[in-house]
Image (cartoon, rainbow, N blue to C red; front, side, top):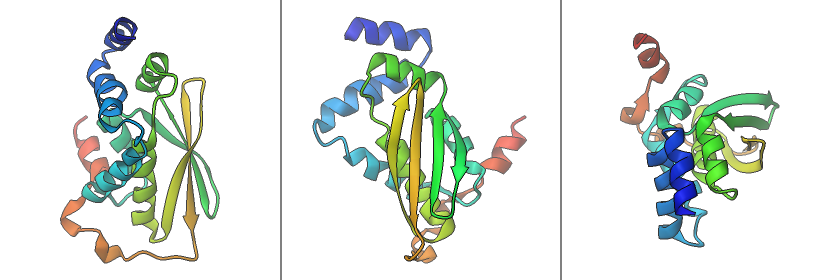
Length: 162
């Protein structure tokens, strides 16, 4: 897999990301790949996004791909993750793990709306990863748990760069 891995990922300039996400991290965590979900939640607690539109900006800046909300219901939100990095990761490893992104998305939605939220990967077809975030409207979370100094304003920062 090493030659194909290098050829595919270096062609799209995503070698650093694919090297870490699809080679090193799986080797380190082995069968415990689900830990990436919790790592994503931890990242969301460290980089708190208060505005909905910041989520897609964060995904792009993190090199995770292009995120788009395609459906929103009262207790379920559906997102699609796409882009060159997704195409590359799918070519390099058909069973690429997107739990880091799912965990981040679940925790971010939970922080924004104040209800428990969990995410699952619904599909990884045609270079698109579908992530469903389910919200428990009968629960609530303490907004004080989110450290004030971890809140960032990506939209304003992103807009000022252009």
